[in-house]
Structures are given as structure tokens and as C-alpha cells.
Image (tube, rainbow, N blue to C red):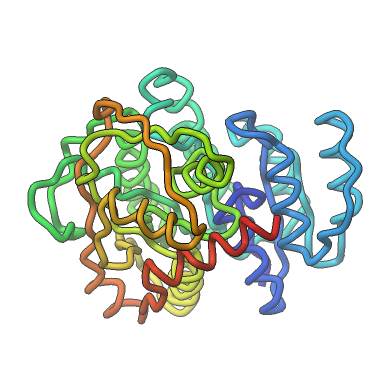
Length: 340
């Protein structure tokens, strides 16, 4: 089967592509190597996902990406340097391949940056996603998985968060764009018969995690004996989900789509285990064998107090069964970080 994966050089995308290729599928990877963080991280992700992690001579961004495209090309893998806001560029890709299913992970991520750049987040996360659905309509592609986010729940007072909860009160532009994607996705499902999963990811972590996210950032700063920014009193909490469990949930959603029709489903993919900020920091200190130097700061606008996934629907519908607890997951992450 041929998958088109957007954002396939990112954290989740590179793990997903690695899994799909190992299962014998063909993959088209679309990524624009956005400057949200160092593009070299995405090049390393890509090489690792393809089993080609060798010495890569970095020079200038454009040259490096073109070199990566050249060395990664194979019969079952093609990488495109492409922005999803460019519908014509996407159309050329759709025209060149017979695509069976799309897994759409590309997005501008992060709650705090979205408050500073809301219009850009709308352009990428809403208009870019609609470009993909418009091309699905034109090219007759009717199997689509879209990455949503636990951020759509805002400061939901009822826990754990269920897919049936009202999510009409997001507290960041990022969350609003993800809620918009769910609503517009239903429109394309209803009008054009696109079978679809909207997957609400809950704080994904593990090897290759984005460097701006707390677990990665804290690990780096602690290892370098530098201050870590510690927002609030440490009681904010997250349902941290290990990358292997997320990939398992995406693969099982994909298989469900292939075997069923008239599908539009929103499901939580979490660990159903809530860890507060103090506990997260303590785990990292234990695995690193070092104490953190904290710089205490006030809570940031847009940050939610707690996330907690009700995963009963995912278990029943697709057989989702997360197996990595937080202590084991953070241990694996730290081991990967120290090997880098």
C-alpha cells in the first residue's frame, strides 16, 4: 500500500515512516523543514527512519535538503520538500503517485508560539489541511488520518477527557486550529465520502522528541547544569504518551480505515496515566543522576492545567493498548539522548 505522510521528517512522522517501511509499504513523505527548530534535527530524523544514519556533511539548508532527497530516494520511499499551503505543489505530487491513504501530521505546533503568530497557524493548520482534502476530492482518495490534539479540551473540568466532552472552549489559537480541523474534516467526510480518523494525541514523548518540548528541553538543560524554566508550582499535569504507543494507535487506525467504510471517528490516543510537573522532573533527575536547577516562573497564557485521556473508545474500536509507563519511557528517552 502507498501512504502519503505529511510532516514525515518530524518526531512522530519519522517513527511512523520507519514502521510503515518495515511493514513493506511504500511511503511519500512531504515536509517543509520549517524553521520552528533546527532543520538538521529533521534531517537526522529522516536518516534514522530510513536506517541510513551515517555521517552527513551539513552545509547550507537548501543544499542539505536536496542532498537528503537524493540519498533517500528508493523504490518505496520518496521525500518532497513541500509546504502544504502550496496547493499547486501538492497537486504535482498527487499527480505523480497513486496514493492509497493519507496520514496528515504536518502542522505548526506549540501553544505559546500560536498566541504570537495566530494567522500563520491558521494558514498552515487550517488552510493547508483543506488543501489536502480538496486534492483527496479531486484524486478520489478516501482514506485519511488527521492529527488532532488533546489541547482541544482546554481546561476541561471533567477528567478523564472523553471524545463526547464539549470542546467549544479552546484557550489557544493552536487548539482552535485543531478543533477547526475536526469540524471541517466532518464536512469533507459528509460531502465527499472521505473515511477519516481524527486522532487526539496526548503529550507524545520519546526518542527524537522535538527539542522545544519539556522532557527534551529539561533533559538537555539538566545535563548541561543550566537552569530550567519551571512554570507554576509543579502541579500542572499531563497524560504523557510514549511514541511507540502512539505509532501503534496510528497503525491500528489505518488498518481499521482500510477494512471499513463510512467512517468518521475522533479518538483519544493517550496513556491514561497522569504525571505532574514535579514528578516528571524527578524522573529525569533520577535517570540522569543529576539535580535540576530551577528558575521558577509564573504560569503561561494558553497552558492547560491538566490533561488525562479516556482511552476506552480507542481500546474498543481499534484495539489500542498502550504498554509503556512513564518511568520506562523517560528512561528510554534519556538513554537515547545520552547516545546522541
